[in-house]
Length: 111
Image (cartoon, rainbow, N blue to C red):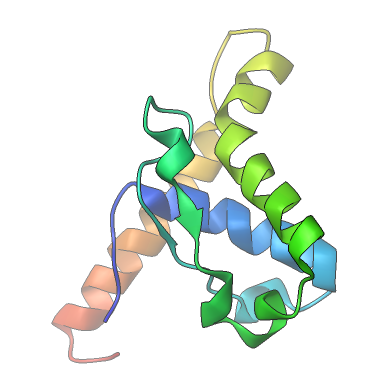
């Protein structure tokens, strides 16, 4: 089963950070994130499930905690980089595409 929703953006970010950390192909990564969406009041509850991917599961704990913090703080970092004049629109669009693609695959009977 898959959990879909606003945490899809956080999953995109988790995939990118795990890719950078491990060198694993980003196309093969799928790190689910559960809890509140990072960047919201509940951002501290956003939790990437590194255990769901063997490459991410091998990241040692000190680095794993740093990656969790980067995911949780990513929205604020983007706002700061854009000096308050926008958000991560390209990342949001990609996350929305992934969600729509997953829905269409499911409706067509593909896993």
